[in-house]
Each structure stands twice: as structure tokens, then as C-alpha cells.
Image (cartoon, rainbow, N blue to C red):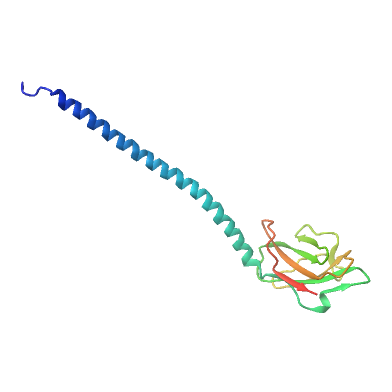
Length: 173
């Protein structure tokens, strides 16, 4: 087939067209990689943000499960013993590892009461062996060494992972 000789003009045109097609492929691949990298960066931020929100949701579930009983006989200041008597009520939730009691006023002090770790100043009201309230139960505690009656008492649930949630109940003077 003698008529199929290569035309130099056509060969040069074919080379330029082929190079142009390759640059379009490379730019498309680079754009795809850029989108993937941006997505990974954004997802890292979103996942950590959502994880923090879910931890706060756990606190929301237990916020009404620990409260101070509103009984004057069991929530009072003993002037003779310099002790604060507080009655704590646990609700339905059993996922708590303890609670913190804050006695506030001019200066405040917080007592973290966890299963297996109870401050020496916190004892049972009747002097018996220390125990936590069970499901839908109340226990009365005496906090020793309190010099002045507090202006308010706040209670904070402590989650099983050790996180102390916001105040679930408050009793004011």
C-alpha cells in the first residue's frame, strides 16, 4: 500500500492533541485528590465535634437523676459539730460512678464522692458504714469540718468515665 505514507503535518498534529489529552487527565486527577484531602480535613473536625456533643448528651440523660432532697430535717447545718447534713436522691439511672457536693458561699468547697473513693470528711448521717443510694433511693450524709453554713449547695453527677457533669440540683439558703 504505497499511498499510506505518513504526512509530517498530521504526525505533528497528532502529537499535540495527545499531549493536550494527557494534561486534562492530570488536572482531573489533581482535582479529585484535592477534594479527597479537603474532605478528610473537614471530617476530622466534624467527628471530634460530634464526639464532644455526644458526651454532653450523656450528661443530659443523668442531669435529673441526682438531686438534693428538699427536707429541712435532712438538709441543715449542725452548729455544734460544724457539719452540713445533706440528703441525696438517686433516680433510675445506674450509670453513675458517684456525685460531687459543692458547699458554696463566700468561699466554696467541693467534695467528690465516688464508689471506692470517699473523702474522710463525708460520713453517713447515722454513723453507719458508708453506702451510695441505690436505684430510686436516698441517703443522708454528714460533711464534717464545715465552719459556716453555706449559702447554697449544689450536686453534680459523676459519669462512669469520670466526667463531672453540670450541676443537676441546687439548694439555696
